[in-house]
Amino acid sequence: MKAYTAKQVTEILQKDDPQINLRTVRYYTQIGIIPPLELHGNKRVYTEKHIHYFRAILTLSLSGETLASIQEKLGTLSLEEIGKIGDNLPFYQSKQMLSNDTHVINEDVMISMSPRISAELRAKVVDTVTQMLKGEPLS
Image 1: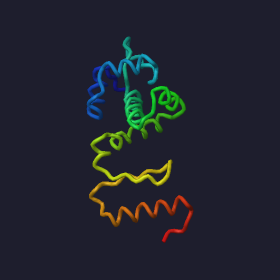
Image 2: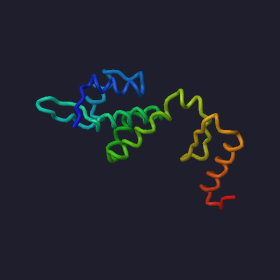
Image 3: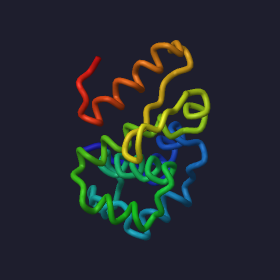
């Protein structure tokens, strides 16, 4: 098990979001939005599991969720599911979002595409997904 200090966790997370700081890491630990720290010898430390939680928290907060709703949501998910949420962090970072073209299909489905994709292909993707969601046969 790899063990991290709060400062090391902050440095790791700053690669994903430069605005995260040591105070935020400690605050999230204090309010219990992440699992209790692990004992490593006689010290309490962070592990990879905690880093997954932090990345999921960053992702969900960038998507507009409150800390209370994030805490409630994370409490019901497996570590694998939490890891998947955290894997989506790059899609919520402003530079990525600003450069991509996002199409809202319905309240549950959004498609974000690179501007390098032609307008014709973009329209085809949106039409295909819309047809699939309506249960229509694909043309």
